[in-house]
Image (cartoon, rainbow, N blue to C red; front, side):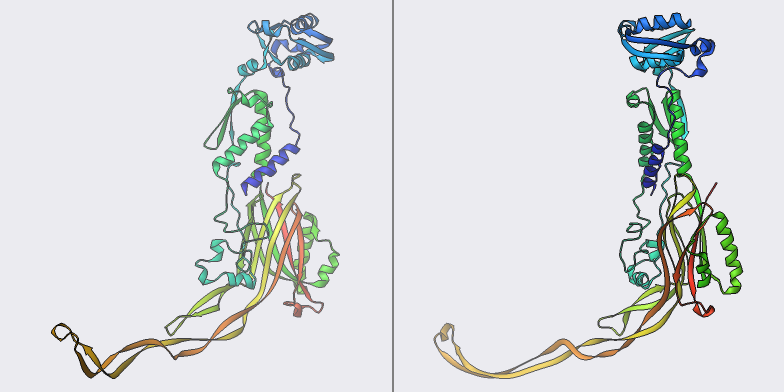
Length: 494
C-alpha cells in the first residue's frame, strides 16, 4: 500500500515546479562587502576568449579582484569562452562564466576565486538532518466483509478460522479476487519493509535534487539513523531536499475523516434532487438538514459509520447482527451421528472504502465497496436424508468327508493304501449388512435483501456523494415507494 503511495507522490513532485538555485556561485547573503560591486551591471561579448583574459576584463569593469586559484591556474586559464552577456549583475555574469568553463567561484579575503566546481562544492558542504519517519511507515490495508449469501457460505466452521480474521471476505463464494484487485489475507499483505521505504526516499533525493552526477561524488553522502536522514551536501541542494520532503510529508502524512450513512428515503425526495448527487460542503449541509426533517416523511436512517484513515489507505467498518445457520452436514461413517457445517449470516452494513486526496487538495477520490443487508433471516429449511450402515461379524462352519489312496514311503514305498474319513472347519466372516439408522436433517436456507454499492467517485472536500439502490423492504412506509441511499462524506484533516 505504501509503495503505491510513494510512486504517486513522486508523480506529484515531478508535476510541481521546484525552483532550483543557480548551478554556480555562492548565495547572495554571503557577498558581504562585495555585494555592491557584484550587483553592478556588465555587458561583454566573449568569442573564444580564454578564462584568464575574461576575468581580467571584468576585474577592470566592476572593480573586483577576480583570479583563478593558483593550484588550478595552469589547467583553467586557457579554457575558451563563447558567451554574450548584456546588462547582467556581475554575480550572474560570473555564474554564467562558471557554467561555461565547468568551474565555480567563491569569496576569500575579499578576492573572487575561480576553481573546479567539485573543489568549490567540497568547501561549501553542510550537514543537515531530516525527519522521514512519516515516509517510512508501512500502512496496511483492511478488506471489509461480503454480506451476501455467497459470502456467508464461504465463511464456515469447516474453514478453520473466522473469515473476518483471515481476510477472506470480499470476494464471495470463497474466491480470492476483489474490487481493488487484492487477494488473500490482509494480514499476509506484501507490505514494503522499512529498509525498502528508506531506499525509496534515497532514490527520490538522488533523482530529483542536485546535478545529475553530483551524488556520485563520495563527498556527498546520505545516511539514515532512527528515522532521520543525515545528508551532507551543498546549501543549494539542502534547499531542494527540504522542498521535496515537505511535499512528500504533506501528502503521505495526510489523514481523512470518512463518513458513510445508509438511509431509506421516499423516492420523491430523490426525484427532487434531479440527478444532483455530488454535493459540496454547503449542499451537503442543506441535504443533511433535509434528511432530518424528512424523518416525518418516513425517511429512516438504517446505519452509519465514521472512520479516520491515512491518505490512500483502505479501511472498513462492519456493523451487523450475525446469526448462525446450518449450511451443510456430512454423515459420520459407522456412527450414529453427522458432522455439521455452521455458517454466519449477516444483517447490517459495511463501509469499505479507499480514499486518496487529489493533487490539488480540493477533493478526495474514493473507491467504494460497501453494502447493507436488510432483514436477513432463515426463511426456509431443506430436508435431506442421512444415515449410516453397520458392519456385523457372522459365525460360519463347514463339514465334509473324503476318500482316496495314499502312497507309502520307506519300507512301504510303492504300496497304495485306501483311506477315508471326515473333517470340519469353523470361524467368522466380516462384512457390511443392510442394517443401520436412516433419517432426515434440516438445512437452513437464508434469505437476504442486499443493496450493494461498487463505484469510484470524487468527493468534494467537506462534501458528499449520494448513491441510490431500490428495494421493497421499506415500501410500506410510503405510497411512492422507498430507495436505500448511501451518503458518503469526505473531509481532509487539517
